[in-house]
Image (tube, rainbow, N blue to C red; front, side, top):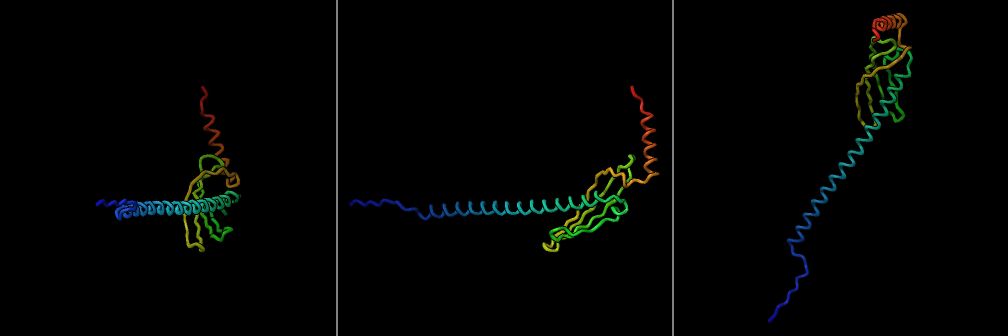
Length: 151
């Protein structure tokens, strides 16, 4: 007697292995998708923060009065964020050139987030100079230039 049993079906072991492979691939793809979504959120937050910092810098640089700049300021952005800034201005050895340390803070009550940043940069602002100090710095620079020997 001849028994022919053509086995054309999958065994239970093959089905379990394929399910395990599918499960691992689904986990990897799901984690990758979650990372992409998180990176998009982070990039958007960073872009918004950069825009807020540009707004604060523009307010600082648009102010011709040094005393008002040193007092700082508050502004509400177009999307309802409260922006606060304070600046410390330091004189340099060059006339009309100032070192500025800007501390910016943003409070977003809508998304319940906030950040605080500090940055330092140089600004050339003749309107922030006092006449006596400017004249003294120019005289010192002129004296330094006169002492330079040209070969």
